[in-house]
Image (cartoon, rainbow, N blue to C red):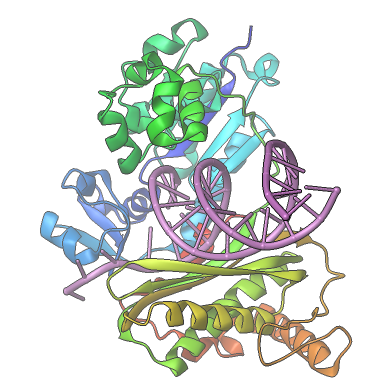
Length: 414
DNA sequence: TCTGGGGTCCTAGGACCC
DNA sequence: TCTGGGGTCCTAGGACCC
């Protein structure tokens, strides 16, 4: 019989807790990291309804005493590293989900440290002693249940779910706590009278399939009985790389569009080359002035990783997307992404890019120069910083709509 | 001062091949 | 001349997560 050997560790209101740690005057007060948009809110601010992703203006209305602080982004990564290094003392089987959250498989560590609950307590104590941060822990037999347990334990708590009590713990909880149930799915479930995870478990899977789709119904039904086959996976490669930029409402303007797209292509290209990746499918998203959005994508015959290739593809896609929607006069966001990623460096010379006015072929002068230029820019930036060279400095003037580069980095996955 | 940024996964229809 | 079904790839959209 499997035992509850999976820990889900989750730092509480991470960015906000770090700020309260660094500045004692902020402790016990409602604070938000960010300005134009709330990147993180302390529990005191959440009590007023402040949530991350919310416009700063709305947050201020909800919580008049809200204190806005700029982020100390380098502290966030340093403290996150410290926390995971403490976890690493208990097991090498760690699956990082984000900067503030991870799954641990401690099945091989019992002979060293005792029961998982004991390890959970020690991790919490050490994180508090060594970093000053509160962290919540869920312990269970599956990843799904461990994550639910840590959510229920928050803030600053721990819950161990013994195998014999799994369903008794799980079934009374609201269905919204499940991974994959957001506002839309919650609404649909409510129409079936489903409020709790137990309600969901009691419904035949076929009944759910009609409204939710077969795949989602099967998935949710399995989870409601705590059937979660996923193990802790230590090596996960990103499957796509993307960058986006919101800029408020603007009239459509070719020069501005080209500048933004070049900047986004540059961000994505730099990361691809740094990670020795290349990709075949380029996707752009256009968000219009009314906040509706569309996507356009194309798949090339061979992978690319050059900024120039990405830019040309993105520009072609954006032009066609805008042409399909002439009724929209304004735009508010672009994103450029690439997927269908392959690993390796031998593919650096550009394939025929026949989707635009420029055709780059392997071994041609144009293709080689593009590649050499990317590499030279990458090398200079490594030494002198991103702003040192290229178009980056001018492209996205910092305004209330954009977010610091350091924050973008923290959100990236490996 | 209306609405950030980086991701994952699923669905559905059409093209194309066997 | 008419026509089958399965598999795979591609595109577009959407829900969701941190």
